[in-house]
Length: 290
Ligand code: AMP
Ligand code: MN
Ligand code: MN
Ligand code: MN
Image 1 (cartoon, rainbow, N blue to C red):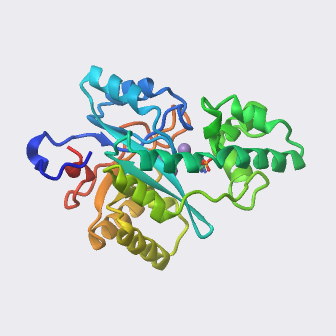
Image 2: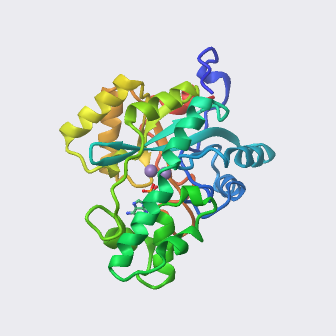
């Protein structure tokens, strides 16, 4: 939780923070305890678990982190629709007992199964059958079924060799298994996170296909709505994107975050704790979390 009365220097600064990753509660491959153990083994010294639209992995993760002496931050990654774009907003330092946040996330989750059925119907039209049943097998919680679970099933039945290829060929806009969906509004995601005492962070901005002007407009809007942070270093960012989002963090006085966005061994671009360091002049988001 945010605690502005505690100076940032009250605890040793982390040397290897990782503030964005997933467990099998959403679309990660490992249970929360295994994610935490792997982070610890990789040398992470401040970890946030940020499952998509769901908080139920946090207790297990926090308890495991405590048993290992690893500092832990409660997190979540909220799905947002803005125009035709899907955005993700990470909430860090949230109170998982906040009812406003819980209700908001429930409303986002409620759309997932209908969307999954529509995706399966769409894939059936091109002759790929039983995808809903296949995807659900990979989802620990059927309410959180998503594209990654479909991707794993399509790999299982030999349609593609690996999940990235499934996304490219079947699950992205314009491809046969893609179904547009209305997630939450940007302003809702920000306000739910703030209501829970958390810091809203723009996740992996390099993944949004936007012009410079569009990105400026998005960040101005995010800040006006109460957004406070941005992932400058993310598993999906190249060095040029890290420089660009460092520039934008300075321009909008945003707190900077460092994130692997780890989903599982073999499925993620980088492992827990393996992202680049943040540029030193930025204000790290963890200065407001410790
Ligand atoms: P959903 O919330 O069901 O739309 O799924 C979004 C998730 O799909 C993201 O959080 C990633 O885990 C995964 N994803 C999106 N694009 C790709 C991609 N190109 N390759 C692999 N995984 C992806
Ligand atoms: Mn994901
Ligand atoms: Mn994301
Ligand atoms: Mn993520």
